[in-house]
Length: 114
Image 1 (tube, rainbow, N blue to C red):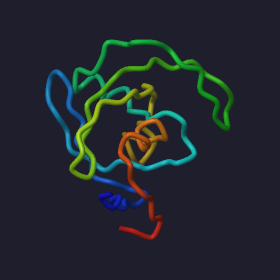
Image 2 (spheres, rainbow, N blue to C red):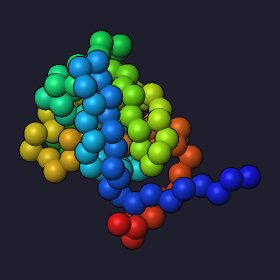
Image 3 (cartoon, rainbow, N blue to C red):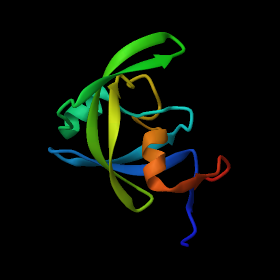
């Protein structure tokens, strides 16, 4: 069996949309069930259509977010995954990689890896 790749808590990712693709740093969050992408970034890349909505719980309470499918490349692996769309303008990372995407990647996470 091929050994699993090891990634850190921040990874370089390329998100591909209808309009263009963008390479950026993404935050790995093993506590998040779903991956998330910033509203403005999703619009710039031409991501969509919305395939469903999902109720998300956070420290500030529950909210309903639209869900889209997006093509993303992380650590040399290309995959298609569900992303909720959220306003992440105030956050350092415009893309958050949650458990739904991490399961498809088959990687180990080392918090000390840079």
